[in-house]
Amino acid sequence: MSELVPFEYAVLRVVPRVERGEAINAGVLVYCRDRDFLGARVGLDAARLRALDPAADVEAVRAALDAAADTCGTGGPGPAAAEQIGRRFRWLTAPRSTVVQPGPVHTGLTADPAAELDRLLALLVAPPGPPAPTR
Image (tube, rainbow, N blue to C red):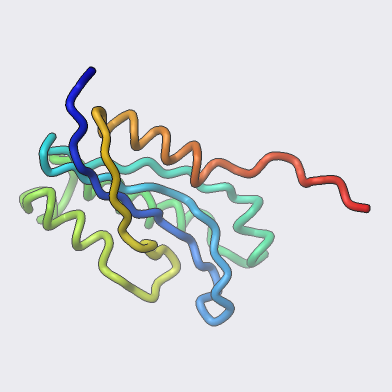
């Protein structure tokens, strides 16, 4: 069994109308200092976004999510790529009042941060199953 190490993660939320406070989960950030790992996975459900705001600019939201994911990579564009990954994670998870917002930072233990990133994306971002029957 591989050694478990601490990691931190945050969900990227899309809040199309900030004044209403409604959000959908659209990505996950994972940072593991012990494994020198910073990664992001995004998955925007355009239909769910449009259900909250029919006028939402889906392409602009996708671009913002992709920019956050690109910031995690070492070969990404811009000056953020030169920053240490811990600083990039803190920058990405700093509170903001934009359409794409980070949720609170949570912690856990993992043997494989990349696998944890995929697990969290499936758990927290994947669209829910069919609605429960109503009476």
